[in-house]
Length: 302
Ligand SMILES: O=C(O)c1cc(=O)[nH]c(=O)n1[C@@H]1O[C@H](COP(=O)(O)O)[C@@H](O)[C@H]1O
Image (cartoon, rainbow, N blue to C red; front, side):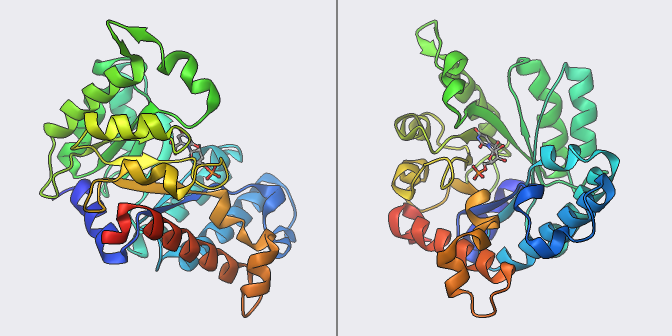
């Protein structure tokens, strides 16, 4: 039993396909967390406290957590230490951790990324990692090998949520788009790493902002977990992501970062939060996202 089964179990237990993305931004942190000063060490301490507050607030609602490495990396070594604490705290809370690092390189270097990030015994202890496929199949192989050895998972970029992604991902060669070719390869990697739940250790990132392609890829990749970003702040709706799920409500998890973690900046949540504490607003936004996804997608069948 590996990451794929763990994710299925988390989705079923919580009856939730929501992944909460931890993307802390200094200017948007609650005032109280910024009082310690704004040097790199102080910012990193604030990111840590903020992220731990988010984890506590969303734990009942989220199937998994996705820390975005970029925001921690921006703060240098202090930020990376904070990221380590955030990963450990999420694991202690029983939440699978999808590290959003979008790593890759030539195979021999990719192997070091894989060994460092993947699996509970690794230095970083991630349960899964986002990876880029653009260096070719030999660059993905070390990730697949380490992930399957250690019961961890991967999410390969297939059709990203940003408008510029189409420039290369939609290019046609040999009668298919690049994202279709990558999707077919990811499907074959998933079939070779199937867990009991019927999905493989190798998943795909497919943006909520491309609902037509999401439906097309669901058909092409029946054994692949989809990580769907772009819901909420980037304009993707629950109706847009519906086609990413299998009929039984599995097969897809939907990320929301800013829409959940900065909910205390929205008056609708401030008015509703009984204590007025920022974490209550975050918890309410996570619960709302789950209800929205359950109402408009097959996740309601979970
Ligand atoms: O791999 C990702 O998670 C990802 C892929 C993609 O195509 N688009 C995308 O937005 N993301 C990430 O998902 C998160 C989206 O955050 P929000 O737009 O705030 O919900 C960010 O951490 C992005 O880096």
